[in-house]
Length: 367
Image (spheres, rainbow, N blue to C red):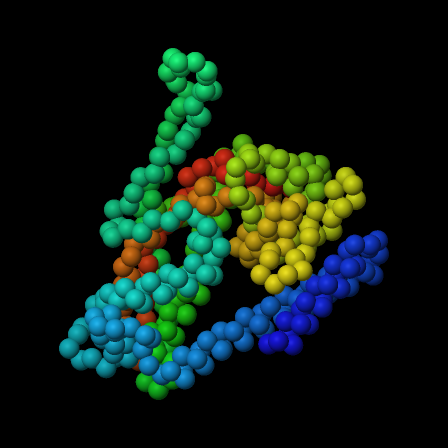
């Protein structure tokens, strides 16, 4: 792992040195090759870190450090997942213990930068909550002891009513019985992967149907008045205009598809400087115009005229997520018997929506 990190650092430095000078077509091709190699190393490092975590758990070969009722609840839950208990109906749903749900939610938060930064609400029931959303700003403040009453401010509302997000995992019965890892951890990891993909897609491009999340690229959640485009095609001027359109006081990030980012990496401003800068330190993000970049395979990838190619936004002030703290799990012990598998169907109740459209600006491809 150390050698991979050293190689990655060397490659990043090489690319940075190239971009400081005049970039010929041959050097541009080299930089693209370096970026691809860095991405490959990132994947390998992530896999090694996950494997190390699995091996640490396998070495312990016991329930995580819990005590009392929580430990008993997880042991009980594990026996149900392994179909060892015969005094329950496996056609009925089983509530996962809070410790399992908390760990799954934590893993989701670590996977999704939006969940880490958005405003969060944890509910005990599915009824939902109502959040005020300003539609018209209040009038200007005035000096003096007797200010005029404001008649401009108008408030609407956003209703966050969690919707069910389902995941189905099928595992070979022999693996369930002999796994060195706690079976609930194996299931949790798989559920996190399924849920993370669905949630990130919804937070970015969701249409809000049936109480599911609205995405920031949806024009109902963020009106077209928050769109910018400058020039023809993908231009540096469009990104500069987006940065200037966002009011001060926000703490934004760029959200962009990796394929689009490849085209943005070669854009220069009016002074001949690249607007995209690679990070040279581990843990620090790349930047566009000095603002962190968050890549997402679920962001729009089309680059035709009129298409959205990026969004600039402050999720901490502009986006809200509501989760119900309970999670149900259904153990399907017979449905997949023909393939010698046990099915685990779980669902979370969650949703999200934009609560401040002015916290976001979208970039479109110019004609």
